Length: 192
Image: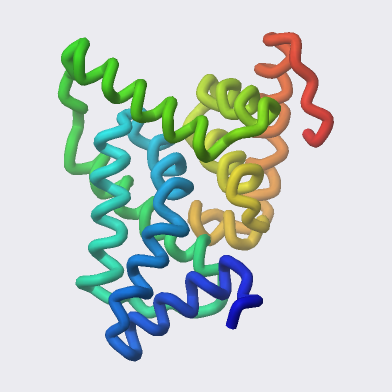
């Protein structure tokens, strides 16, 4: 089983957890998906600690509620959809985020920057990530899922609960907005 792709590995780990009670499967899922899921959720919350709580809540749902994974989409797309729903629920519950003290804000920024550096190493990706922060939430989400997580349009559509056509239009508009932001900074990203 050494040749399994990450997606197959995530699905296989979850199947082992569900079918055999192998807790190592959940440990593998957390290890393999926590950083990417955390950065994705950070796009919703704009608060590192809140994104961390929602990420943990997402993994707790896997353990406690044991939702059924169907192979219609990749394991990552399925997991991110659960995380997205948890983030939306959280945002509905809290109409306003609590104010952070200067010390908490500094700690949050340090945590966020450490995670970004460890997960997004290439200079181009960091520049794109910084420019994405200036975009609206739905543009950030769709670009993050596409570029940083490498998901395909049907998977993105499933996560964001959009039609295929809506997703294609959203990706196009998001790319145009990102291009504009990058050009403002004097940076040209060839892949857009």
